[in-house]
Structures are given as C-alpha cells and as structure tokens.
Length: 438
Image 1: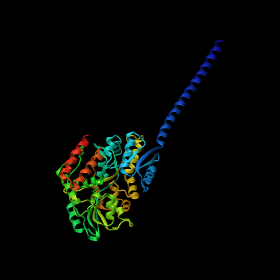
Image 2: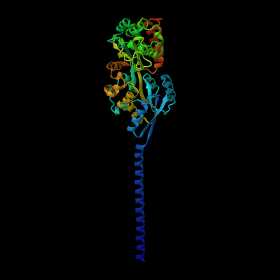
Image 3: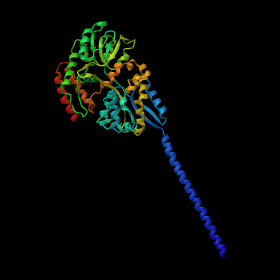
Image 4: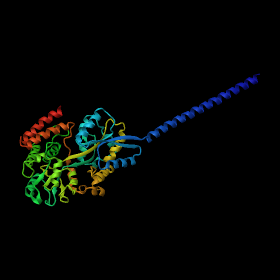
C-alpha cells in the first residue's frame, strides 16, 4: 500500500514538473516573440514613409520637380509634396501668415522672401536651424554672407539662402569701354555718352514709390556708409553718411541724365526702356539680362554687359533680393524637413535650380562649376559674382513692412524736392523709432 502511494506521488510530481516546464517554455517563447515584435516595430519605424509639404510659388521651369525627384532618390523614405502659392510676394506672405497664425502643421518647409525671416521668427512661425547646422557641421562659410545675414535674427539662424540676386549696373558694351566706378563717374559718363547709338538717356533706375525704391535708397546710403537699423534693432538712420547718400540719389533723379518721368519707373518699365536701346546705363536685378537676349523683345542683344553698382565713399553696395528656405515651427517632421532644406540649399539642389531655372546660386563654389557657368553668362562673370558678394539685406526687422512704407513715402517726397534730404532722414528717424518701439 505504501509502495503504491509512493509511486502515485512520484507520478503526480513528474506531471506537475513537466507542466511547469512547458508553461515556462511557453512564457519564454512568448517573451521572445514580444521582443521580436518590438524590434520589428523599430525596424518598421525606420522604414516608414514620411511625406512633407514644401510651400513655394509656382515654378514654370520644371526645376522644382527635378529637385524633388533628385532628393527622393537619395531619401527613399521621405516624399515631398509641393503646395503652390501665388508668385506675388505680398499675396504669398499673407497666406503663410494665415496658415501659421493658426499653428497649422500643413506646411513643413517654406520658400521665403529675404525680407520675411525676422518677422516670421518673431511671430514664432519658424524653427531655429542652429542645432541642425551644428549637428551636421554645415560649412556656412560657403554661402553668400548677405544671404546668411538675411536669414539671421537675434543671433539665431532661421533660414538658409536658396537663390539670390542683387542690384547690378547694366551698361552698353558697344558704347562704354570701362564702366564707371563711382556715382560721380556715372553722372559724368552718362552726360558725355547719352545720345550715342540712338540712346536718349544716360541712366535709368527704379524711382517709383514702391518696394524697389527702398532697394535703390538702401544702395545709395550704404555706399556712403549709412545704415537704417543696426544689429540690435536700433534706428541709426540719422547720420551724415545716410544724408549724403540720399543727396546723391536726389541729384541723379533730378538731373538730365534720367527720363523726366523716372519716378514712375519700376522693374518692368526699366526692362522695356533699356531693351529698346534708350539708355546707356541702368540699375536692375540679374533677371533683366535674360530679357535683353530675346530676339522679339530686345534691340540690344549682344550689346550689354554688367558690373557692380558705382561706389560712394564706402565702396559699392547692392541690395539683396531673392529667396531663402526655412522650417515651420509646427512641422510634425522637423528632422525630415531639415534633410530636405539641407538638400535644396546645398550644392546639388542649388545646381539643379541654376542649370534648369537659371536661378543665381548662393553656394559660392558653384560659380566655378562648368555646367552652372554654361547656364547663364552671368554666372561666369566675375563682376557679377563680386556684385553679389557686396550685396547687403534690407533692414532686418520683424516690422519690415511698416519700415518700408515710411521709407517709400519720405524718399519720394525728397526726390520730388518737397523736402530736403536732412528733413526726410529726420522724419524717417522719428517714425521708425515709433514703429520699432511700439
């Protein structure tokens, strides 16, 4: 009886032992499965496709499509959609403000006019790029300094330059052997040469009351050492240097070397007049060069060259124009957005835009690239490149629109000789101080 009971106990113990062993194995296997599942999820996270949205004006050249295709080939897990905005800068600006003021994440990377970064960063619309630049050891010395400055506000980098332009002096190469180096030389040569080769004027520029007037004003005053706002957002416009620069601008606008209606000229009027062969010299942006090569629109094909703008007491200065790229602070994919921004502002992305859309690079080594030089004669022109290097941004301030309005009004009054240069500068100082301190 005892022997049977003992055998029964042994049998039950064996059964329990086997059962426990099976349960442990099952539990271990389940843990292994869970672990594998977690690892797979991480692997899948790396493989997940992310779509980011790029906000930009409409591109008629197809270069943006090529840009995105090249990027996606290098970044298989990042897809880019383009959301097109009006090419009108003011309309585009207002639509961005509407989107970002609601903290919408619908845009990840944006194309920005050079005058927007300070305003957008102050409003909290942009993501600072400093950490990305530092982590990826981006060599910012390879970019045009003016472009980097335009994207910097309060000692932080909010945008990187994509393609830029600057004011240039166009001259008739069939009339002028050596372009003028100073504003006084421009006046002298224009007086001498106007009338040659059926020209009517010595010089044309943009003097209409609009944003282009601010660009011209900025070039005059900075060439004499003047400045509107300093790095600390202080108004420093009221200086002898600024007054002297405005006086030179007034002198030229009221001289016989310009059209009597030059205060009605903007960019299109300048292009039209110069393409007809009416003037020896003109101040314009790089885009005019292509217009002057069109057989059905130009009488000066092969007769035009460019140089840096004339110098004042402090050298030649050109106003910076163009577009920068930034990242929305509300983007849900900031790392992917940075990869795209880094690509489109880097050598490969900028080369695509230069070759396919003749957009002026901001990445300086590209001006030595043979394919880039073939895209436009300007890109191989050393004077053009030097002009870009001397370009400086308009006042970097979050209240730029208000600042621009004041400058336009007061400079227009000075050009019409309603007030003196001193009075115009004093008026601007008073009004601009109120704006920045409001």
